[in-house]
Image (cartoon, rainbow, N blue to C red; front, side):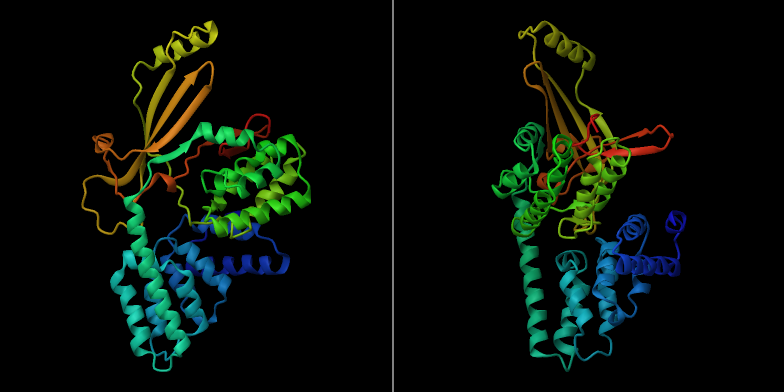
Length: 411
């Protein structure tokens, strides 16, 4: 039940609930209980549970290992120590050990705990007396690929971007995608300037509002999106975000909500398109208004619109949104204040083009003065997807939340 899931704090209770959810998944192919449990556990501390659950690594299946990696998120030390413990007394690499090494974020492990990382590969190379030539090659390839990835990340950080999103470009793209077939063409033609499943998903509500696609077109859309994630490295959408969308759609009176909910659930159940914690969700700490005389600006904007007097200036407003966030690759930070970043929102209002908004990552040190936040150059605007949530009550006084760009009053 929901209450059992939310109150699960002991390792034994978490293990029991996880096994029950996996049983339901395997027997009836139902993901909803597993999603609900994972959403709950992701908000708890899980290092102790991961150590408890993975104590006998060789007895787990790959689904169980994957779930532990999800719960671990960016905490690499617990997995590195588990590997070292499981290497004790071993003479060769077993299949589960190889699976864990292959699917964990070794580049992050190397950045966070280089000493433990090197100790693992040192033991594999020097202490496993019966290791096969094939497994030695496997281990060497993993360590080589990890070193290259860490090096390439360093180079990417030198060319980071500050632009997060240009709303007008998204609106123009949305205008070209009236049907799901249009979306397939846009994806295959590389017209999505932001390689993120998030923005694709947010175009679905207006598409379904205008016309319900056929089951064949929906399947073709999912295949197209999978190809984009595999070949062009589209960033996966958080499963929690999809949960927000479907929960809100359940209260819509429109009949086409059923087909849209099914498609969103298909995306949520597809680990090639969505993820629990590959993308971290960070709540805005506070907002700073950098637009003095805001009342006069709003009045000027309304007057320009009513009178069509183009001599009045287009209204531009600026705000800064502050986020506290320590990047997993930042080890020991000695800078004053909190690690984080600031996004600058630039709003422009005119009677001709309506409203426009662009969002940029602030990199100028002056933007951070007096905020209590400092920026590390590891953060790039292209990695950030901003969205807001709105809450309200239904007729039965049940509070619901709506997330994202694609929803409007028509739903």
